[in-house]
Image (cartoon, rainbow, N blue to C red; front, side):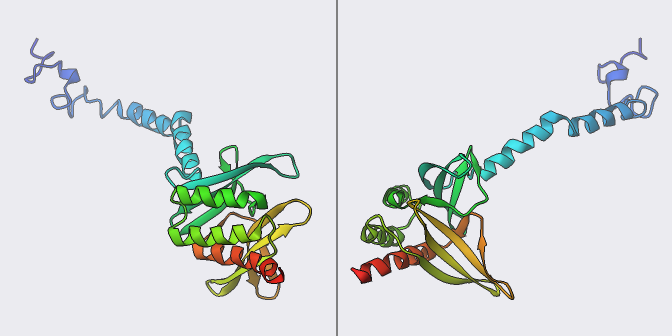
Amino acid sequence: MNSLFCRHNRFTADCPICSRGTLLDPGRGGARRGSGRSASGASTPTRSGARRPSSAGAARSPGYPSAEVGPYEDGEARRYAVRLERVPGGLRLAEWSGGDIRRRAPRLAVDDLPSLVEAAAERGVLDGAEAEALRVAVVAAGGSLGPGVSPGRAGDLRDELRVEPLEGAGLVRVARWMLRPGTGWELREAPVMLPGARYVEAVSAAVAPDVGGG
């Protein structure tokens, strides 16, 4: 009887203290079983699947103040919306489709700019000065924008934030262009993330030709 029970009032085989170093020690024969469980557990679809939603959640940027317009349809009949978000580092303007961000410079309707600015102001995406300056610009535009540019730098390279009307589509493309040594200006087909002042400057410049010509 004494061999079955230990001083901790457990079966000796089940006691991690009293079975240590004996043939009953699970750390001897059972070590391989334990490591096998750990290895299989680390590679199961459940665990790897559990990591993917957190990654997808990061792409959806939960918790960031945002405003959205659309939906629109591209040349391949894919529907998307355009979202303006206040993210760490500035404002991000991007196309979204099916809950995922698109790797393309955003295109949106000129007529939707006022509603985007108002929604962004109400939801805290834009600060007071940014919102007021953009309101003035889109009202002055009256549904018609020319090309507008905000020059800047990205490290050693010059860059421009450009607001560009797309002929016959009623859309504008808001895109960043980089000046590459030896190759000239290059369009970055990607979401735009810059300080709010750059958007204000580019949109205001897009209005200026019409205002001056009137």
